[in-house]
Amino acid sequence: MKIYEGLDNFLPIQNPVVTLGTFDGVHLGHQKILGRIREIADEIKGETVLITFWPHPRLVLYPKEHNIKLLTSFEEKADLLRKFGIDHLITIPFTKEFSQLSSEEFVQKVLVEKIQTKVLVIGYDHRFGKDREGGFDHLMANKKRFGFELEEIPREDVDHISISSTKIRNALAEGKVDIARTCLGRDFELNGVIIKGQQLGRSIGFPTANIKILHDYKLIPGDGAYAVTVKLENKMYQGMLNIGNRPTVNGIEKTVEVNLFDFSGDLYDKRLTVGFKVFLRAEKKFGSLEELKAQLEKDKLTAKAYFLNLLG
Image (cartoon, rainbow, N blue to C red; front, side, top):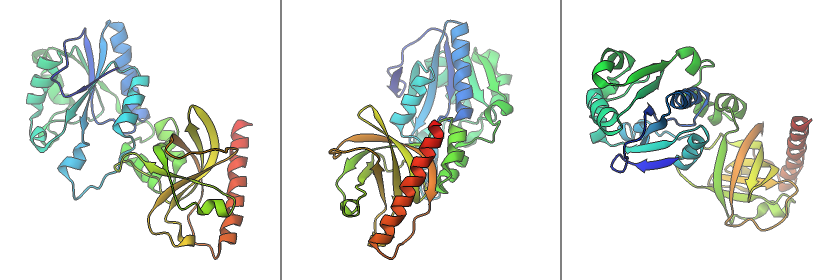
């Protein structure tokens, strides 16, 4: 997959089959669209093109009203799009000036003149252009003038289980990683690097790795304990992870800490990917470190029972 920052370096390709949108999370609704443009491209010996926008439009248009956290970093989204058969990923810088571009100007300058679109596929009720004025009806009424074929993915395909990035964000904020998994078609993941923490876990027999999330705009699930899988240096481990302020030890800053089962070794500065499996319990303040240790023992048993059942 080729990635372009802006349109300047994009050169003509054979029979471009195009879609556009933010595609945050690349959830099952998005995957319907991606599958369809891949199918059409294979039929007409074309290449797939996805146009996305960065930063996320809501971060630019409503910086104060919407402190939005994203399901995927750009790197994570690009990796997913590659897996779903995108040949060309174009990132258009989203600015306030760009947001003033009318739908007509966007279609003519970007889709027609620059990309020379052969087929455009959009999701149900997709809107674009200044004040979201552009949509399927306008495109359909002018497709002969624009010179490309047009297809809209039906609502029942895109929204068959009420999938939306907002729904997934809300579910994760409440620790409902099972709902997120259903909508995404995979585990929700965090990518990060291990940094040195206070090492309090070692004193009670539960050494934890403190994870620094790579992007501050990345959504972190709600506070609590989770059973997780961890990909580290191309190996998979099971473990449990805590998100929160660690009230038992009077913590102030929110941390993300993972305890790996059946692992020994130095983790500092290593990158890892965490997959969220199940919510174990809410974070709480315990009366002592001994009480915390006893709860962690229970959490570990619960997590291991989950993995055993998953494998069985």
